[in-house]
Image 1 (tube, helix red, strand yellow):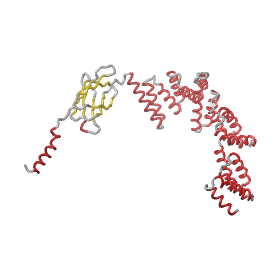
Image 2 (image 1 turned 90 degrees about the horizontal axis):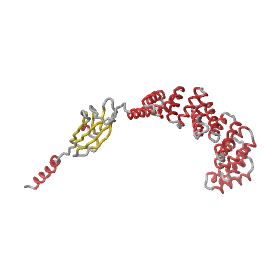
Image 3 (image 1 turned 60 degrees about the vertical axis):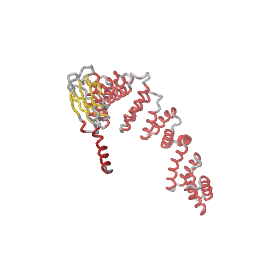
Image 4 (image 1 turned 90 degrees about the vertical axis):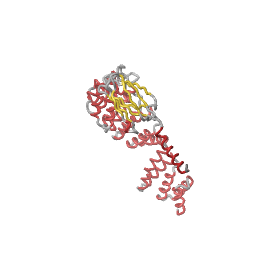
Length: 408
């Protein structure tokens, strides 16, 4: 046989081999039952393969809930859908082993079973949360109400209903939902917070007092104070400042050892130019948090705004001791502004105070040199600029100082 003919014959043989290979068929045999183990007939079963549209199969379970599916081509995984009116639908991915009989059991609970109702309620609750987060609070309230009606024992749905009702100006409904949630879960602080909040919005002071008193003197009292503080923060963010102050004050009363409300009250009073009130709240806060830099700074600003020079000097020293670099940086900005406004004497005094607390502040040293130079104190300016060079000769201020000393 010629060599070329032999090669063609061999090639044809190789190409024909896949057609001769045996196809591995697979079978899936299964049974569908409800939550009580009873067969479910008439279930619509749909099998699909994401990678093979032609692999779609549709069938219905028999009288005993049985079904059988043959696969001519087997893939690793198929998507199975089981649906029947009156039952929870099920969609799941299942593998089919090639060349084998695969046996599976499927449970398709009735949609009125306790488990199905709980799952439906929880689904409604999750849908309500999503809608609430999107800003549709009325729609969320309706979903939470449906969840509560579907499963009255779902405490988180009642809490969510209370929150949504409160935010849609329905405080009576919010109060009822919060109380019901508290009965389901007596230690739930969120339910107690909402009960307090709803009673306040209703102006039902007896209900508010009852909600608060039910927790006072217990291990949950401090948690209630935290919740009231958080509500105050929320009110502040909503620009409801009077309500925020009320919540902060209530929080401080309920837990006298909680520092945060005093800090919040100090800030709000300062912003309202109630500097004496701000100092009072700051003193209470700093008694519990003596090293808090922000509060020490605010105390200095409040004392200065009040015009109490003695207190302002003491408060400034305390702030500088707690945060020398930050205090120096803030003071330097003020001093630089004074220098640029040609208020040289005030700028010089402030710069000298900065350097007492932070002697190596290079910009303060440099600007003080300029102050002295512009004030006619040439010798002092030379000393100050030379110190800048000693601190950091390669800095911008150090290089500028070298140039200036050539001409002084």
